[in-house]
Image (tube, rainbow, N blue to C red):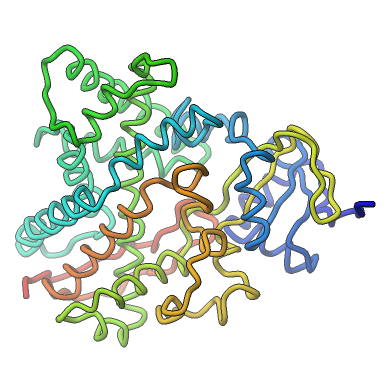
Length: 420
């Protein structure tokens, strides 16, 4: 007979404040305290939630027969980060249909195309930065990536709207975990950027705009749902933004790459030309493991089931600890040390290294842009190491474990940028 047991409980009427105050470490702190990979809490208005951490937890979390995404993400996240009815919130055949659309953009040719666009934009940026006393890398990377992803996606972007679109796309992921004015800025930005994207979708369908057939804009405009009808314009615009917004968010990782080069100067020597492709891959993966990005993923129980002695009841909110799993002491030796070589013998499990979600790219809710993220990071890293020199002035490079997304407080200032 299956056994049942009471899992640990983080008592409280509503522990949302605790979650916000501890941020990325809320789940892992309690897993350590309870000596458990699972515990119960109450958040978001006092609703019951089960928190999970670790490889086995990730494996069960990405079982689509047990969990669903519809109704899981808080409204404030839908109104800013994800958008409503986007791929992150879908289930079953509709999710698979949209996921195939995204994955069709992640072929080797398109990834190589983005690498070249990124390098070109870096070259242009370096020429501009050479004329400036100092730059804030995170801010500059936001603009650089906005230009690059719009070109790659086939989305028209005029020079006089670059600042506005960059600000809007940035606000979507800056507001994902925010409260107060920043959250409302994100909502306003979501409305504006979806309206802008919808106009481009309509122009393609009306024949006023003719992007290449392999671009995201073309594919989003002409993609058919399971019933054979075109995606509604509003949904197509959400999914187009779900290409643009996550790509601009890679600016967070670029800032952390720069921080890693500064904090671990011995690593920079290993990245100098001639480029060792294997080491670049390991370094980028370690940046994604070591530094905070997404704190957690959420889902709801699809139907009652028993796992590790706990009854998961239909409709219960479940939160998977992404950051904690990437630092789990049973999965990673010396998890709080920066050590790229750990990936040399990594088993490539889809469940123990999950900075952008886990599971299968086509069937599960793993980020479809993960490969694109890695290629952008490698290209940007090469530019910072082998194509430019810069000074790092005194500044506050500490990063918060409660700000989401986290960043070096100064956003990484570079002085006296010069081309190599």
